[in-house]
Image (cartoon, rainbow, N blue to C red; front, side, top):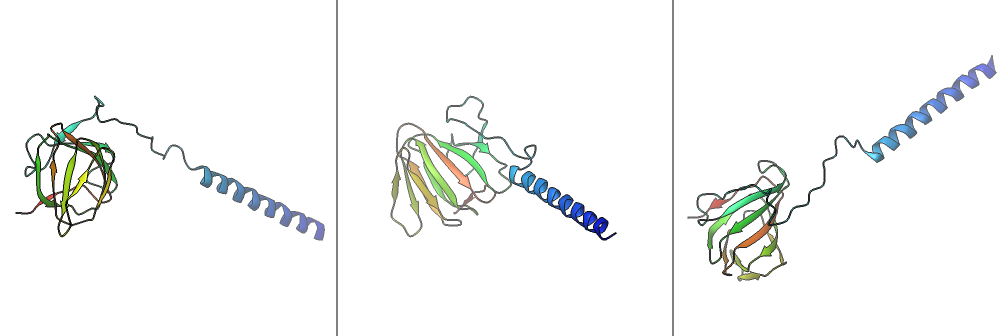
Length: 157
């Protein structure tokens, strides 16, 4: 009788161990059906859907969503303005992580000296900090921007 109970306990222990191993392996592997696909785009990709910028931005300004939903957190966009365009004073609820992909752009944050972004330069813009910019090149400026929070822009009169 004692041997039978010990055997039952041993079987129960092995069953629990097997379930633990299987569940751990699944958790580490992840559910591939819930994983999103990777994304690869270029600034001249014909499938990009360019939309208008907020009305206070200069004529010819466009934004294309690369990844995410602009009304939600963690969205990547391309921001494009014509050469010699001035971007008026504004701010965003989110911090911005930016890389200049074409053109040459001057950016001035409130209380700071003007910085010049050249091709491939990275810039960080703090959330809610007012700033202006100017595409100083004759060719359009295209800026990659990663937003932590939903995408927005508020003009400062």
